[in-house]
Length: 436
Ligand code: GLV
Ligand code: MN
Ligand code: MN
Image 1 (tube, rainbow, N blue to C red):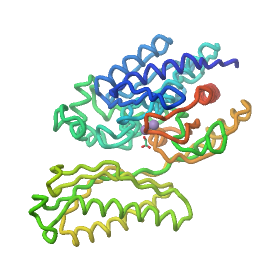
Image 2: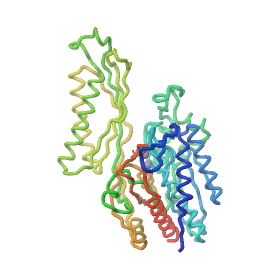
Image 3: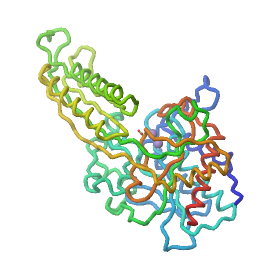
Image 4: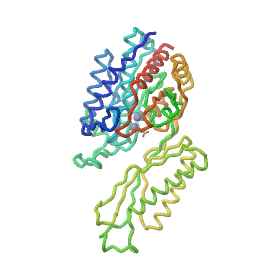
């Protein structure tokens, strides 16, 4: 099969999508390649603009497009045997504030390019092939990552999902407060019950997601591609610390119940326990991050009375992750007592790791060998939509190197050659899996 990936076409589409951003144009002149800071939050006018552009692109290539109740977008090429399950690829196009232009987008536009290239080569698929663009892989707006793929995989209760609070007002004071996913998606034009989003078993028979590595290993080791054998297990929580505020001059130190000082102890506690878990295992698989802190009332001369913070904790081993949380909970109880504050925990998610299908991993290895592409089998430390697709379909992922492992930053970068190679391997895998 003579498949040609049109790298220029794919690159120009990636750059076009990058310009659909709510960051001001910020080409960083200090970097050798053009980069664009991207903010594309789900269901904002910018996201809707990107969706309309993607749909037009897919239809122009001769594919049909279907959108489900949460906005997951299915770009479909019908196979000759409709009785067989489809083969899927895809990722996300939403982007956290001030991030890069390759996270997720390479998997969506690369998937579309893979389908186009196969079609142009004259290939006829027996199984249908689809590229999916998932809604809200990033947790920015509704507090939980992989919203679309969780619902598609049936691992998030649809009624609870519709009640997820819209957190946009926390960072954008012009956004209306008190709305929930149900209202926001309907206002954006995505109707129907969320229960309808779950994919029936057998809808897909195989799934391969293309993504940038978001870590440094491939580049450091000079390896062209990563074949993902498993995805680390993510968990997240939100905390509120309530203390007692007052005048920064007049409220004397012995009488303080400073919520921010208590939160600072919490942040250092979870870091300490994550480091201890790594020291004990001799590895680096436990990671814990407090990425958001909200301070009330937030004034130079006011003692913080209330603090909110988020915790993102991940591990390849759920038991070890639970151990860190248990140690953290003990510290929380001590901090509450010693500092006379009230700490409440809101559980958001605690997921299991995902395991790739041996068959799809072997298929990818065979393709890499035939193409003369170096590869290594590796674990994904970032989560991906594939984590939750694994509940309804055998999955695997292909990673391409990204410069210095940088991601979730505007200077995120992958070379055109790496993007083209990853797309080619995914195209060949889709073709192979579609005709099995
Ligand atoms: C995905 O963006 C992640 O946080 O792993
Ligand atoms: Mn991301
Ligand atoms: Mn991503």
